[in-house]
Amino acid sequence: MDTKVIRSDEQHQAYLLEMQNLIAGDPASGSSEAERLELLSVLIEAYESQKYPVEVPDPIDAILFRMHEQGLKQADLVPYFGTRSRVSEVLSRKRPLTIPMIRSLVTLGISAETLLGVELADFAQKRKEDVDWNGFPVKEMVARGWLQKFSSKAAVSTEELVKGFIANAGMQFGVAAFRRSLHGDAYSPTTKYALFAWLARVIQKAREKRAGLAQFDRSVLTPAFFRELVHLSWSDHGPAIAVEFLERHGIAVVIEPALKGTLLDGAALQDSDGLPIIGLTLRFDRLDNFWFTLLHELAHIWKHVDQDETFLDDLNSSSEDRRELEANRIAKEALLPRVNWKRSEAYLNPNAETIDKLSRELKIHPAIIAGRLRKEREDYTLFNDLVGHHQVRKHFNLTAIEV
Image 1 (cartoon, rainbow, N blue to C red):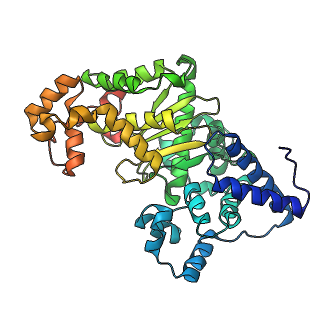
Image 2: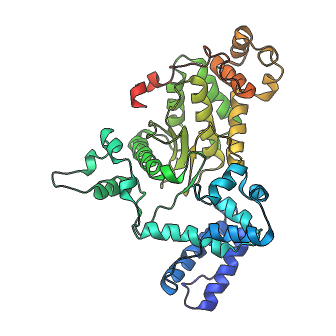
Image 3: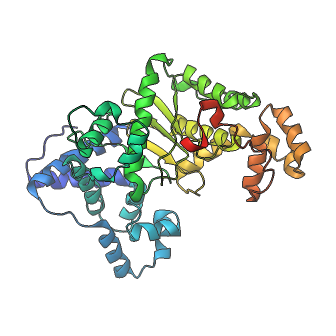
C-alpha cells in the first residue's frame, strides 16, 4: 500500500482510521501489519506536531470521564488492566498505560487517538530533549565507574556525561528517540531513569562480549535446550557453566547489580544488531532464584523479545501479563517437569531425604526443588538450608557490598 507524508486533513483522518483498525486487530510483533502501524504512528505524530502544536488530551482524564459517563467503578476496569492494584496505580498516575491496556480501553469506547496521543507525545518530548537528566542516579553511576570514559579534562555537565553514556548504548533521546518498549513489573515511573541507566550499562557490557560470542541461531531454543541448561545446575560450578553455555550459543549474559531503589531481578532484550542479551542482577544470592530467573529471561528471548521490546522483571511480583505467565510456565517446566514433580515423594512428602532423592533422579540441584516447594506452599521458612544461600555471586566475583 502506497504511504506518503501527510499533506492534508483528509489524509490525516484516513490514516487515523486505519491505525485504529490495526490496533483493534492486535497485530503480531514483526508482522507487516505491526510494521505499518508503527509507520502510521510516526507519520501521524509528525503531522500533528506541526499542524496542532497543542497539548494532547490526557488519557487518564479521558478514562475518568468515561467511568463517570457509564457509571463505572474501579473494579469494573480490572478486565482492562489485569488487577485491582494496576487500576489504582494507573488512575493515580503512578503507572503508565501500556499498549495492551490501550488496546483494551479502545473497546470501552475511548478512542485510540486520545490514548495513543499521550504515548506519542511522550516520545515527542523525549525527542525534544525534555528529559530530566538530573533524574539519573549520577553519584551511583560515578561510583561504579560507568561515566569515567565519558569525562575529560575539560569540565562537562552532568547532562553531557549522561547523554554520552546513554548514546553509547544506542539509547539517545534525540531525533532517533528512545524506541524501546519497556515491559515487566520492575518498571515504574519513579525508577525509570535508574532502569534506563542500568539497561544502557548492560547493553555496553554485552557489546564488549560480542566478538567472543558464537552466531545466535534461534532454532536451537527448544525444550531440550532448556533441559540441557538445567542439568548444568548439578555441577558445583553450575551458574558459571550456564553462562558459558549460553554464550557458546550466541546469547550474551551480563551480570550487573541493580541500582538502588529498583526492584529488578533480570532483563531480556535484543541489541540493534540482533544480539540477544540476558541481564541478571543477582539481587538474591540464592541458587533457586538464579536458575529460575535465568530460565525466565531465556524464555523471553525465545518467545517474546524483538528489537524494540525489553523485559525488566521483578520476579517477586505477581504479574498477569500473558507473556510473563508464559515465561514462568516455560521456566517451571524446564526446571522441574510437572509429570515428574506431581508424582514424586518430594512433592507428596517433602523432606531433605526426598528432595535429595529427586535431585539425583533428575540430575538437578536440590535448591531448585526446595525453591519450588517454598513457592508453592508460600512458606519461605521451609528448607532454608537447601536453597543455596551465598552460592551464586561467588562465581562472578561479586560481593554483597557490590550488589
